[in-house]
Image 1 (cartoon, rainbow, N blue to C red):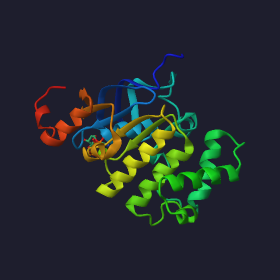
Image 2: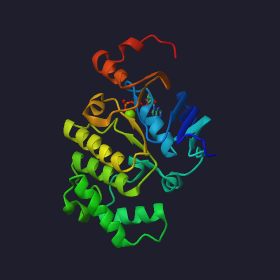
Image 3: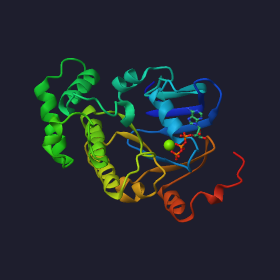
Image 4: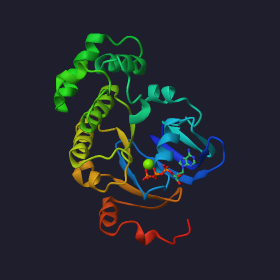
Length: 255
Ligand SMILES: Nc1ncnc2c1ncn2[C@@H]1O[C@H](COP(=O)(O)OP(=O)(O)OP(=O)(O)O)[C@@H](O)[C@H]1O
Ligand SMILES: [Mg+2]
């Protein structure tokens, strides 16, 4: 299917795994190659649920609709198969792996993504190159993954993983991470650096911070999720308006 969009969500309904709580009630979204989309919405609207469903988390169940990536229906694919195909989800990777260094972890992840023919020296060179571009201290490479990382270091490491793994589609959930303005700049600046090198990368940034969008992320499209549905979409000016007015204007809208 050569004309299929890079990434496409169709009529997605998602419930908790036990089927008790219906959270997403028909989400449609298309991200073409090279586009950055921001998904925003108030607390409890379903943003993290969408991110988890896109990852293939066993916590949730897709009851209707589909997720397609490069023309393939990936709705039932396990997380690691999605990753290997070129979908990057920041939280796909364990938060903390005691005893595994950033370097060893990335080497292994890259070999899984690219096949076993990637040499450790090649991986090492790629890592060094990106650490320079992202202004990451090279000492981080030998540290154990995420153990006692500061919030900013975790973010840098996430962006480093994204840069090194060369995905075609990156899904970033910045919702719950309590990012300060420096961490936001790291994410936005890192994304810009990766996009400069990989202009065809598609990005879906899930956030309720308008600030991330004004710190250099520059979305092509902004979507508002409310009560499990996308109730508004627009250009970057929509993010500015939400910054000024909040979500109040959507109150009372029957979605
Ligand atoms: N495992 C679960 N069991 C029951 N309800 C859940 C579960 N996970 C999420 N929910 C409910 O689904 C709704 C959406 O939650 P979600 O975490 O996706 O919101 P969010 O948009 O990410 O919010 P926030 O901006 O606060 O991070 C909430 O009402 C939440 O209580
Ligand atoms: Mg959330």
